[in-house]
Each structure stands twice: as structure tokens, then as C-alpha cells.
Image 1: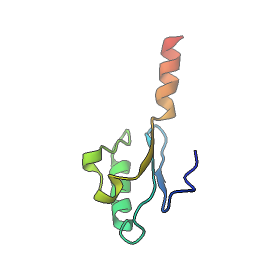
Image 2: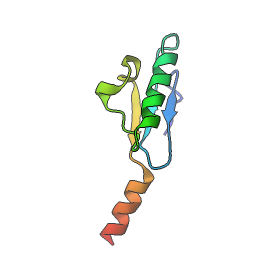
Image 3: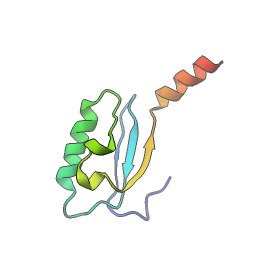
Image 4: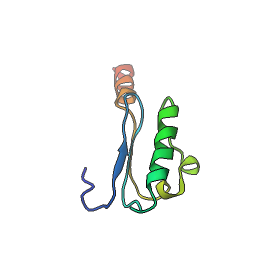
Length: 80
């Protein structure tokens, strides 16, 4: 996955949490929104960032939302 064609890209990644990749964020007005969203991400055990709860600049520009790897491992173990 490449975000090279998108300006101002950030990602939130943590063990056992969903991964979020945002791009095309407004350079001049995103810093406080990114910090607010990072705090929300940190506070949630699963890292979920529902659209309604995200700061305005991060409601748009989502490039990827990837479930945690542990979720797929559990699914694979249960299907064997």
C-alpha cells in the first residue's frame, strides 16, 4: 500500500488494535485534530475510531482501516 500520492499522511497503529491510515489532511489545520484523534485511539481498547467521533479533518481522507492481525489469527484458529 502506498500513500505517496497523498499529502500529509498519518497512521495509527498498535498491537491488538485496528490500524488507520489517513491522507490528504489539511497541512495548516490538522495538528490538533491528529493529537485529539490519537488520544481517542489510545483510550479505546480495540482502537476503533467511528466516523462520528473523529475530529472534523479526520472524517475525510481515510485511506485504510485494517483490522488487527490478532483478529485474523483467532478466526484462522477457530476455522481449523
